[in-house]
Amino acid sequence: MNENRIGYEIIYFYNILLRVGLVEFSEYKEWLDNVFLEDIENQNELLIELEYATNSKDKTIQILDEFFYDKQSCLDYDLYGKMLTGYIKKIYMNNKCDVEDLSHKLYDMWKSLPYDIDTQEPFHMMSYIDDPISYGDRAQTIDLLERFIDFYE
Image (tube, rainbow, N blue to C red; front, side):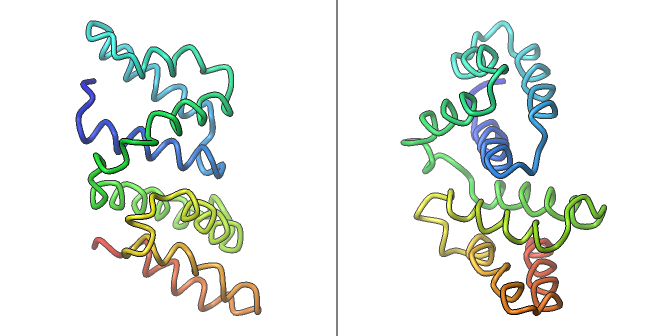
């Protein structure tokens, strides 16, 4: 894997999902192992560092945070948004996470987004999807969640 734009989006995708617990660390490690083995000749420094950190989720997140600190502008946010909404849709449609928990995790993800996209849709929706839950309006949260996951369709 070269450090190309799609690579950044995938790596950032896993960073955010790991942070809020929407992807299992074992799934991330399996993905990383596959990518690392595909790229073994290129000796990608980030992948090597991440491989050494596979015994610690917290260390992995720290490495990714440091890596993306000054590289967030390199991300294609539409591509990232499509990946994120597609993944959230799978979780939602397969009932792998209840609506309340999922809406709170989306808010937690939103807090980690770069400042230059957190006010752009569909990302801004992540900041208020869980608001109706706080006053008992589950139906409105479901409506907002479905608008979020269908944003790119």
